[in-house]
Length: 233
Image 1 (cartoon, rainbow, N blue to C red):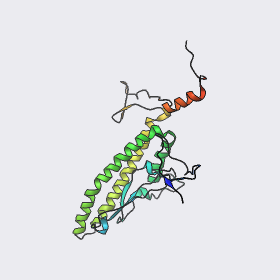
Image 2 (tube, one colour):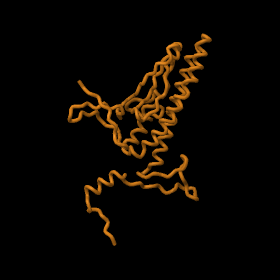
Image 3 (cartoon, rainbow, N blue to C red):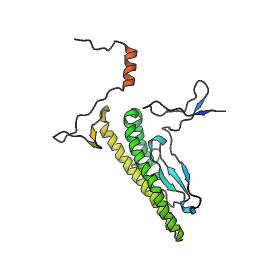
Image 4 (cartoon, rainbow, N blue to C red):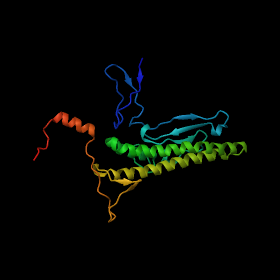
């Protein structure tokens, strides 16, 4: 029988590429994997709600750690366009596809995880908190429509799911553009309150070149000794 242990990764470590079995035979269950196609956490709501508002699929179109989950109600009569973009396939990129836009951001992040992921996490949680906060009010509106015995509740919930998915897609495009500008050429452009700093002439402020992190510097010194030591004058 396999034993599942949840072991946190060191800070700044990108997700595993493949699940692993360690030397003791313990199978490690990886929840955050780059080759995830979709994530589908389901939520059963109040049992006293009508069928229209009784359940949600929180849909994410990539690696669980790299996406904001948007609500798709079980009674929805349409799928958000970005989750079924007609011009996208597994071999054709499309800016209308949440799968491809989310993968664009995550694959930009993996090689420089410790530098880029904090920005991804900030946007991810900003949107996720917003959608969770909206949930109660939307369901109250749907319940009121159900009590009036109109079909409008399903349309309301469908439109809410479409709006959240469209907003997420637009925000993720902005996030990708922001990441490539901020972290271009392995440097970091300085910013204040989310706005890139400029010189008095209106040009971008000189970028910061942070170099290796402290952990790697210690490893480098330990492995090379005095080989690269700069002699005193």
